[in-house]
Image (cartoon, rainbow, N blue to C red):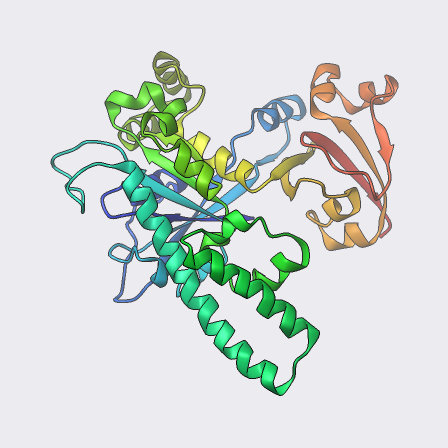
Length: 359
């Protein structure tokens, strides 16, 4: 399951959006310590809906994203390191206030999304700098005892990180890959995690949700910190959540929006991490499975069960759109559209796969 942590200043609407995303109705309880509420959201996917209509299975199982929301009163980045749900998060969603409401005072008294975005980004950088400095101090002592090549490599990459952080640049901007990224994985640096800016709009601005970044002068910031943005209006989302599907669609059409803000947040978080969905279908179940882009078929089989990965023989693959057009796997087979692929086949988004394996 993909995991994302929500961050943001007080009165940004972060907890409201968390509750809407996860259908959680209780605010986090602090109990005097740093902790988080955790909830799960289903990834909207029209393809899975259509496959379910075609096969009429007993169960429909969408891909999911797990969201964590920091308990009220603990918004500082240092506190996040004490919370497992944030250390283990695959991405961070920063909720930035852009709505105007005199009854909900802003901590800085004025509504300036760019200032708030930079404030939280700076906190992430400073929290990571403290972690990097502590580890470098420890490494210096360890290297005096045993100067192994691996420790020297770790020191080298951490020094690069320290230089970037001291300059106020997040580790996200270093673009680390391979062994360098692996060496840092255990530190769970916050500024290295993919970042999605969720701009919480005023009701008057909701028709401009698709251009929220430009509307509030955030485009340059997003480019600088290697992040993306999505615009939503929590007030509107509260109204949509109370409507049935038909009325909700009519409401969205009237606003000129392709989907609810909540669906767009979930989808954007999913895409931010570079994941795709493949499907398994049948009379018992139609399910969407999440895997990183570029994954070969044998590894993808492991998303279902490790036994299938170990006993992998071949994958029977058909693109979802071809299956929906033909109406059955048998028809796809008759038209030569159901392919047999080996273990090194790179799974594509929307593939419908049947894995053949030894038991």
